[in-house]
Image: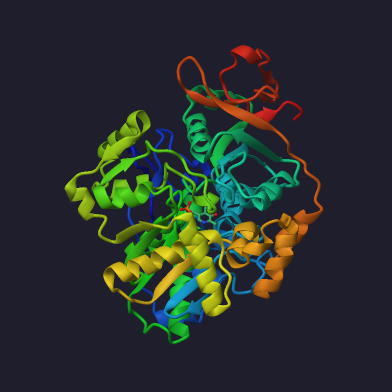
Length: 522
Ligand SMILES: *Cc1c(COP(=O)(O)O)cnc(C)c1O
């Protein structure tokens, strides 16, 4: 069955999977969604015996139907290889009926590697399939982990260039160091004086700027996205929920066909949406527990049906979840609106203009698969300590948010269905908060001393990704502002930058309200 993709904001557009991957965002500003969610109810016992790569091929070929099996296998083999530090790519760690699904064994030690190690291959394959010879310029806003994982994936991939915007001061020191030391002739890293939402909104506006698109086309370039708004990120994320279920069956922890619950630490709503798609495809899941930190806009949304981003943005110890506009929620809204693009468009426009939208009671009924709650920073630290004291297992701050919310869910509902909790980052990435939660007396140590302390506390090897940044030179120092021009349209700009796309350049810096694209020296 061929699956086509539509925009959440108009009924006219209909593209193949590879075209959706290439474009990233739909031209009308909407997100691409599969026209139909395919069913996948395999023989669980047989699936349990498969490798990650085999499961990936099965799941991805159901959704990316215009890729041939050979193309997909090629992409999968190039993505899920020795860049991961365990051969099974991901693994489960049990603690009393809760299984932490470790998704951080890739090159940049966050779960973003699960999808971003394959996205460049899906994208270059898509370009070849569609006869696209333009250079693909990836614009990516990051709350900390996407940027590094995307650069690691795209660095020196022929025919691509990647520009990452991260909130200066809004990411952990390890995250920042990982990004600013990134090598590759085609990578650019820019800190912005603003938060993730500022970066994401600006990037989205650039994508839907027709004039910019024209100029890019003239220069033989086109934009795409490595954010989870790209369907090429979401589809590979569905795979690990199936794989994890197979592992539970294999280990005799869950009888084949029995339901599980899934808790996901959530920011942009990509990871949990992948779990929701898995459930819709047929994975036996009872509840999807959506865990937030103190930026709990989603918790309030699940409770009231009102999405309200008008609140102060909190910088927390789980920075990759410091987000007030969860982009992928649009895909869920589209579903619960009965796949009505007009309704979705109206709600998203309302979000854009007033920062608020409210769904109807009928739509609210569509949220019954979800439970939302949040953990404060002190609850998060307490949870890291509790899990360590009880099981000798060290979890990162994001996973700790999920872990704490999982316990809130179980206490609230009495539902003790086997729980898979997505473990989204290595604790080494957030060593300061993690170590201080367990050994507060080490607070005055430097970042790298804390990493060594974490090694002693956890007994786990220091990941290569950390060793790599100890002595790596800083290669990127640009920091820019996000400003509004006279039309109140936000763009990212900075004095070191001007638009320069193969011959086209605009030096009228003061009157330039457009975004720079490439640093001046490129
Ligand atoms: C990105 C990220 C999240 C949030 O995932 P979304 O798909 O944006 O909801 C959670 N934890 C970590 C460590 C991340 O990097």
